[in-house]
Each structure stands twice: as C-alpha cells, then as structure tokens.
Image 1 (tube, rainbow, N blue to C red):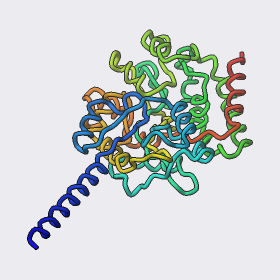
Image 2: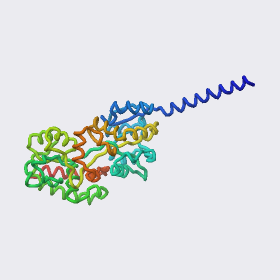
Image 3: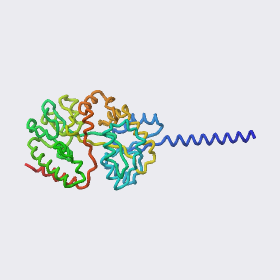
Image 4: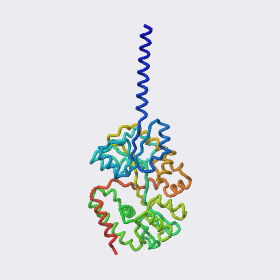
Length: 359
C-alpha cells in the first residue's frame, strides 16, 4: 500500500508540474505587433518583456500596408495593430479584419478622457468599439508671435497685418480648418453631400479672397520650416511638432492651437480578427499607457500619446512647449478626423483646383 501510495503521489506531482508548465506557457506568449516607427522603442519592449515574461515581435508599417496585410489574411498574422482611427470603421464594415475591444480589459483611467471618447465614437461599428487611442498629433497654427500676434484662428491668416507673409498647404486640412474657423462643422456634414458641398463652396470663396495674403502654398515640411526660419513667412497652418522644432531654435516661433480647435489625428490600438494573444495585447496597451512609459514613447516617436499626465515625464523643454501650446481646454477642443465617406474627396479636389487656378 505504501508503494502504491507513493506512486500515486508521484503521478499527481508530475501532473501538477505539467499543468503549471502549461499555465506558464499560456501566460508567456509572443505579441506580434504591427505598428509605426517609434511606437515600440527597444527600451520599452525590454521593460515589458522583463515585467511580464512575454516577448514582443515588432513589425513597422503604415496605414496602407497595415490594411493590405490584414485584408490578405482576413485579420491574421498579428495580435495588435495600430492603424489611424479613420482606417478602422470602413475597413471593418467592408472586410471584417478586426475584432471588438473588450473595454473591461482596458485601464481607462490612464487615458485622456476626451481622446478615449472620441476614438471610441469614431471606431464604433454596429455598436462595438474597435479602437482605443495611442499616439496623436495635430495641425493648427505655427506663428512668429512677435509679428503675428493677432492670428488666433485659421481665418486670421487672411488679416491685413500678415499680408504676403502667410503659408498653408492646398490640401484638405486647410479646407476643414477654415470651415471650423468660419463657424461651420464639416465633420457633422459628412453624411450629407449637399450640405458638405455648401460648406466647401463657402470655404472656397474665403480661400480665394485670402489668396493675396499667401506668400506660397507649402508642399513639404522642410520648405515650410525654412520659410519660417528666414522670416519670409510669419504665420502658417502647419503641424505641432514642426512648430516645436522651430521653437527650439527661435523662442518667438511656436505652435498655437487655434481657437476653433486644432485638427487631430490618432493612431490607435486595434485587435486583428484572427489575433491569438489578446491577453498579451491588453497587457501591452495597459503597460505602455502608464505615464512614465508613455513619455518614453513620446521621446522616441516625437508625438505625444493619449496617456493622461505623461507630459509631466518628458524632457523639460518638450514639456514646456507642449503645455504652452496645449492647455487642457485646447486638448479637449481638438477636432478629430473621422473616417471620410466616399465622394467627399472629389468635392474637395474640385475646390482645391479652383482655388489654385483663381487669380
């Protein structure tokens, strides 16, 4: 009997060890992450792997490639992806390449509330949320504050005191920004082609009226930065990190959030439909949204994240620039780009062509 009992204990012990081994292997998974450059820096990956025992395989990509890869596999090959928020609802409705986010597994307290709510709204399909925010940026005003103090909103670029020293791109952000500055809401009209056309017609008239003020329509980022550095341009519609880059060289030049609201993009966290490591994906999201970890991503990527309070942990210079440009009320006033319905780009293209051709 004693021998049999010993044998049973041995069998139980082996079974227990095997179960523990299975549990460990289940918790120590590999996260296949499809993301942008700078969003998963090596130091952050190493910290996550050490803390969780999981491994992270990072594949760098962009929106077009992300969607193409997920379409080709029906949402397979990766466990967590980071498309922009306007690349989720449409592809999901058409191709079914994502799975819903289980919001109970997200530490919502770590997110800037207005960004979390905006992203949830813009990534909802059939009542399910498919994305939460990560890295974001905006376009607004880049100003020489000593020479363009009166410019507070997009339409102020048409003021007489900055005539001939203004620049912006002939692209859709300019149309959207001017519409908001003129008291209209182009995003609210996305579902009504006639209403959107009416808004764009009014913006077109304003941009043609404003044309004598424009030194040049900038095409590339370096071109705009050089125009501002030389003083040929003192007020521009441009992106936030460009303004902060200029500020590092000339404290008079910086990014200013327009009174009608900066225009914002957000790159999200989304789960591919056939992902195999959801628990590790949620663990990664909650890990990188911790303010101190998020600050490391900001230092690597150059843009801020939706992590609440992370600006307190970035470098002193960047913190000062960010907080000067984005007091809390300016963050909450950002106009986030929703998905673009079919047909609107053709309307916008016609407007831009006519503005360019106008005398």
